[in-house]
Structures are given as C-alpha cells and as structure tokens.
Image (cartoon, rainbow, N blue to C red; front, side):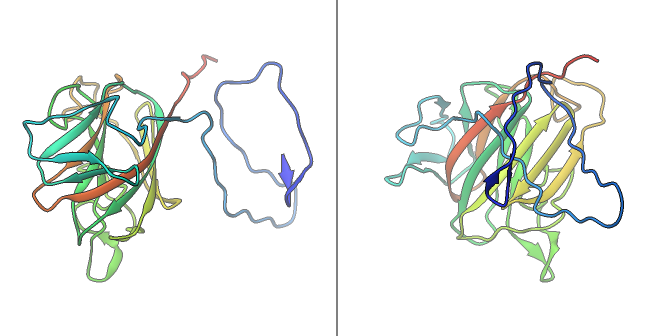
Length: 233
C-alpha cells in the first residue's frame, strides 16, 4: 500500500480470499473519497500485434480485418466479424479503439456462440449523441449493452483513441469508457443457451464487429483477465 507515493504497508495474507467486496470506512466527522479505481492484474494479450493468430476470420463476409504497421487491428467495410479462438465466461477485457469517421457503428461481442454471426452480448461502439446532449446517445452509445441498457453518457470522441474496460461477472455486466462508468446492467432473464433469448453464463468467444460499408475502426492493446469462480461461504 502506498500513501502520497510512499509505501506504508506491505502484507501477504497466508489464506487470501479469491474474491470479495471493497468497503470505505470512517468513524466520525466528514470524509470524502474520489478517483477510486481498480486495476486488473495478470491480464494477457489476446492480440500479438503482428498477425491474426488466435483469431478466426470470415473471408466470405464483407468486412476486411488487417494488421497495420502500427500493430493495430483495423476493420473496414461490413458486415463481418473477427472471432477469438479462445472462449471466456467471466472476465475483465480492456482495449483501445479509434473510430475513423462520424457516428460509425461497431461493437465488441462476448459470450458468443462460436461460429454464429455476432450471436452474443454486445458492448456497443457508437460515439454519436442527440440534441447536443451527451446523455442522449444515438443507437445505445459507446459502452452500452446493445438492446439492454444504453450508455448513461457518451464520453468518447470520433477520431480520438479511447479506452474501454468491460467486465462480465455472472449475470452482472459493466463497462467504463476513458475511466468513466457508462453502463451497469444485470441480466435477470431466465437462463438460455442463446444470449439473444436469455441469460447466458456459458463461456463464449469474443468478436469484433464490422457493421456496414462505412466501417473504419482500429483496435489495439487488447488484453483480458479471467475472473476466478466465487468461493462458497
């Protein structure tokens, strides 16, 4: 533990809990907290920056996924998808995205049924908003769970890199864009193999979407940390 940049405590629990809640405490008087942030540990890269090893491409679909000289994944045109070979259930996913156009549409799909067309939950990418009001996203808004919960605020901009953190923890899903919490949703539907029809907890693939012929997006720094199972009381 550090305080004002100085280490004040170092302790290793001999019997650590795998998971738990964080609590903020005060005894009396007034107290305020701000800039509360968590950093996932032990993330692993799911894109090597050189080629699309570890990903399944769909040449028969219209989207064109390439690796750029800058070590980014770029997608142009659509409709199409790029799918991980690995499958993930509960996880923290982080990535950077660049939208090279105005109000372009894309998404990060997760817990997908492998091989099917974008059949999973979708964390939306769309930086447009209405009436000059960032709390009125167009088409769900970046970081929203498409068709489930709109982003509470559009904080990212077209033609600027932005970061996205997506957490899937059982039925609970949440997303942050540039560190801002834009979505927090729990799927209360009855369990179903197909996430379009109900709660899917089963691990599935992650997909990047090419939405339509206007698509032009880049992704970099894709990394994931799987969440350990909850311990029984």
